[in-house]
Image (cartoon, rainbow, N blue to C red; front, side):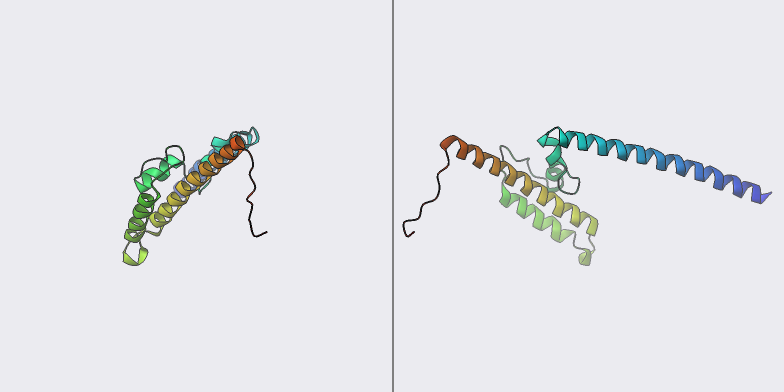
Length: 140
């Protein structure tokens, strides 16, 4: 009699696991198709949105508890200060979490990436407006 219950539990568990796996695969496939279509269509905001380990800019700012960069300008001193403090607090040798430490690192990288990309865009626009001026050296 016990073998019947065990067999039934294994069969039900396998069906539940199979359905969950199939649904997760469908969602991952749909997400991949959506992101590929967004990148192919030239939507830069979506393509750059999840650049660093799947973090959005808003998530990165929440992790480090800083304001979102306004117009490509962020207080990088504040970002680095918060990063260093949180990174040290979550040091695994001091009883912290390696997972949290890696999230903090990725958040800092994401904010730096956003600021750098915005700065490069602003520089290229400024150069386009004033025209290209090669750097001339007097000694050459």
